[in-house]
Structures are given as structure tokens and as C-alpha cells.
Amino acid sequence: MIDWSKFADEVIDKLEDKDVVPVDAKEQSPVDIIDAETEEAEQPPLEFNYSDLRVTVENDTRTILIYCGEKSFLKCGDESFQLIEAHFHAPSDHAIDGKKYPMEMHLVHKAADESIVVVAVLMAEGEEYNDRYATILDDMPDELGAIPTPCWLNVADLLPKSKAYYSYKGSLTMAPFTEGVRWFVLVEPAYVADEQIGYFTDIYPDNAREVQPLHGRKINKTT
Ligand SMILES: [Zn+2]
Image 1 (tube, rainbow, N blue to C red):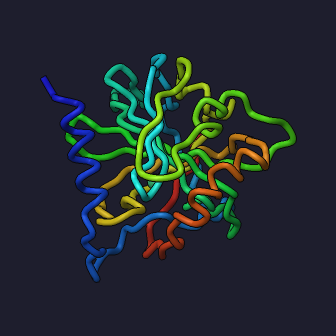
Image 2: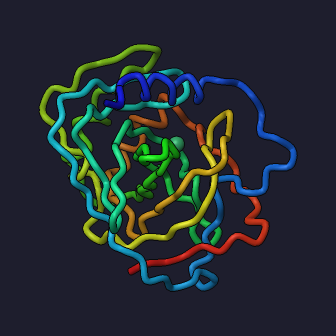
């Protein structure tokens, strides 16, 4: 039996490690995804088999995150990845055609071989208040601490309708910038209201990383 809560602690330990990126690092994240330069790839669809959760929304002094229990899985073909936690960046880490979005959500998963798989959801400014994000964004601790969510939450409800994705090999976007991370960046953004973005940027006005060179990496697109 894998102890998932222990793994979550290890991931957090890694994220809190202040080691800098090795100078020879060639597969760093985030990247600027130029849509016209991506390669259409026949890959299995992403299936989000997430469960309803009662979680805490936590400020760890670098971002706002939620730990996701033990019963949520992402499937891609024959592979299954355990959802560990979700957290946010503003502005977005990834850029599309040179443009960053106001925010980005990262869904951090663990693969059977212990490698990390991250689903990135770009967050754009929408006309309407997004109730599905209210559970998280409306009541975040503005300094170190945790607040229980007032109601059940299913992280799958935070996803856009289309699950088309870009995929590439990269790294964590926070120290220690470990490589070997598989990225799935959803093509369609999720929309949240300007004021909801403001709740987050009041706490973290800029916790994103600059885009990194591709060094010859190809980005696939699966629709
Ligand atoms: Zn992140």
C-alpha cells in the first residue's frame, strides 16, 4: 500500500526545498506554446475520475493549495494517476502564442513509477461569477494557514468542457524545478470573474515563473 498522505508531504518537502535549477537543465517548465508549431498526436483522451472531497484550502506562503485525499484519479489510456493536490498561479505559468492568462490551476498527480504528472488549466476572465470556483477562491487564508471548505468540492467541476490538451515533458515550475514531469495543458481555459481573480492576486500578485526555452522539445496537441 502506498501512503498517499506521506507522498503529499514528500511533494511539499520537495517544493519547499530551495535548491536552484541545475545549470544544464534542458527540459524546464513553463513554456510558451505556439499553437501552429504543435504536432497533432493520436493519444488517449484524459478521463477525470475525481471524487467529491471535503478539503482544506491552505496558504503555504508560495501559493494557495488544496489536498485532494486518496480517491481521485486521472486516466490516460492504460495509465492511472493519483490526484494529490491542486494549486494556483497568477499570472499563468504557461503562455499560449506568447500570451499569459490571468491565472493557471495545477492539478498535481502521481504516476505508478512515482513520477509527477500535472494537468494545467488556464484561467481566463469571464463575464460571469463562477460558482464552482467560489468554494476555493472566495475564502482563502491570506497568510500561512488553512481554512476548511464550507461544502463538498469535486475538482473535476473546475475543468473546462473540452478536454483537448497540449502535452510535453518538463519540470516543476517552483523550486527545486525537478525535471521528468509530464504536462497536460488543457487547450480550453476555465472562466472566472475578474473579482475572483482579484481575491487571489490580492494574496499572490505574481507567483508564476518566466517561460523557459524549449531546447528542441516538441509539444503535442490532442483534440
Ligand atoms: Zn504550479
